Length: 211
Image 1 (cartoon, rainbow, N blue to C red):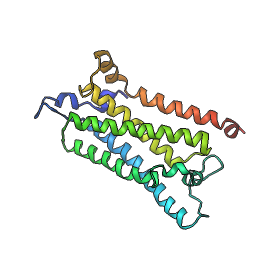
Image 2 (image 1 turned 135 degrees about the vertical axis):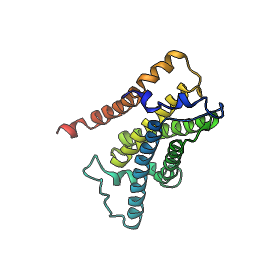
Image 3 (image 1 turned 180 degrees about the vertical axis):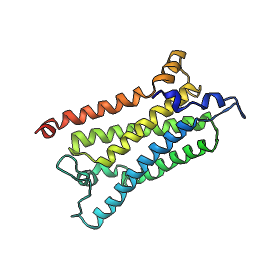
């Protein structure tokens, strides 16, 4: 799928109305809604299970399937509350904001450059935080959470497409060859990113998967 199709209206609509604002195509808006909803769903389920675990230390989350895929181990770790409260509670807020932005775009909203830069910074923080959690999950906690993986995928896709949108619409300065590349191959960046994480997961527990 070409990324141009994911943001097919934003460039053509850039000159409409206030030239200092930038809109987004229907497909791009839906992408924000879908990825935000995936992250929100993951955050919601993990939050509910976290509360159940606090009420009953013997509670086993439904996604604790084996010694490797064990959401319970993740929830009990110190890394699960790095800001002093359960991490998914942050996701409940941030993913909801992304959904709201996507809904606004569907309704024809246009945002100024600083707004798009703020969204880009937020998704960059999200990817950075997810990367730290991935490292902790694989090499410190030694367990995986399927709901966390869903949130990781949603955040990664979200980040790369928001960055592509901003570069192709001039919100972020970039050479013409990069704008042209992103116009055709934005999909390649999240695919490679997710593929690398998948390979790390595969090799980290290779003996378990193949045993």
